[in-house]
Amino acid sequence: MTPPAIVLPFHDPQGIMAPYLWRLEAWLKQRFTRAFIGLTHPTCEMQPEAVKRLQSDPFYCLTYNPPGSLPGEHYRAVYHSAAERSPADQRLHLCDLDRPAFALLTGHRQAYLADFDWVNAQRQPALFQRSPAAWATYPQHYRQIEDMLGQVSELLYGQPYNFAWSYLVLQASDLAWLLPQLTCRDFGVLVEILILLRPRLLTRAVDWLAWEDPFILGRAAGELRSERDASRDETLKRLRGMLPLFNAILEKEPALQVELVWEKAAPNPAGE
Image (tube, rainbow, N blue to C red; front, side, top):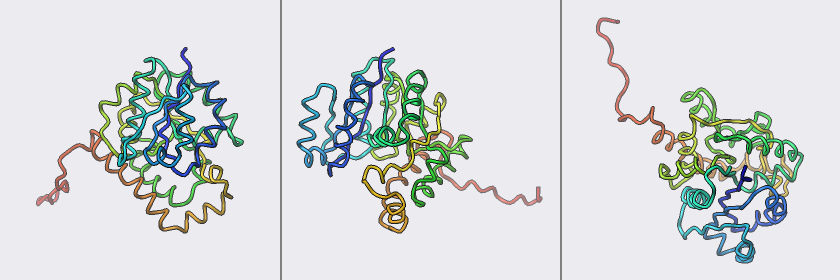
């Protein structure tokens, strides 16, 4: 079996995540054949030394996103790179770097490693989702907004998918099949992917998808959570990120692709 590759959209203009990449580098090279990294334009502009280091190492296959491009385009660009350059049966870990960093560098390490081995032995697409224990660590507005997405998912599919997912593993052939069908330029691309994969999708609830920001930023969890809960700017930021996902569900779920008309039935004069 071909070892997996990792696929990372990478927006790090402030240089917060690059040190975590260097800390994980030896482990990544042991477990993955390549790391496909999609660099945003602000990252290239503001972190030239980190970009230069990536360019000098053949382990990294880089994609460069142009000025003004949006998150959905960043995902699609690096996914295209990975699909084109990977054997059809290779498992690809589509994730944000903060997820393996948090899992491997905290008490979640052994659980993550066990799930890593499990998911690489599968052939179907597999989505890691937040467990109840993981959800409990997040600020309140994160949970409230994404719970609305979960409720929509449960009404449509009978289970609450994490539409705003951050760790999905699939075969390169599945990714190649997906890409021509993706059109969203924003985070709605995450919804498109799940809706297309859903008939074959495995899910696994994990504690290592707990809230990673306190660890990544070096902050006390309770203090940072209180700040985020009290911040209207943070709430609006979360809404701006999540609302496009609702629109993507409306546009991409076949059961909802009907003409939007008045559907309320007229009263029956006979009372029937």
